[in-house]
Amino acid sequence: MSITDRQKKLVQRSFVQIEHYAEEAAELFYQTLFQYDPSLKQLFKNDIKSQGHKFMMTLRVAVRGLDDVNALVPVLVQLAERHVGYGVQAKDFTPVGNALLYTLKMGLGDAWTPELRQAWVDTFRMIATVMKAHAFKG
Image 1 (spheres, rainbow, N blue to C red):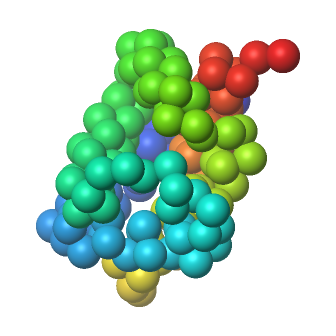
Image 2: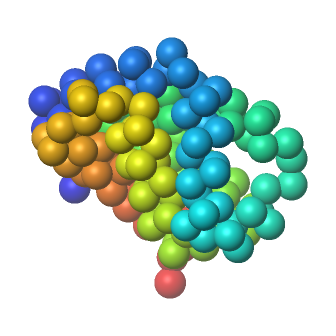
């Protein structure tokens, strides 16, 4: 599973816009995530604000890593292994992806087009597929 060069550029450009509001975006992401699946709140032992900072940094690494997906894969594998240690399950990727899409839609406003949405869907699906394949074997 891969994304096109155009999708990669759309995702990267739109993320730059969101980065200007990283703290607010992270706050909206977690509020939305916990609305979608309140049981996920128990996985977060630390301050949600610092967790939001980590989330945005990780997302930045992934988005920038789209320029070299082969180099990104080991990073995603390590991330997946850590998340399994936190208690994340394969099913948790769905509410995470949905919360991310909602956050992006709210943050980007009129710039959130069907094409951009599909680019993010395909990008998240690719990332989640790599992570789940390595963390949830069997």
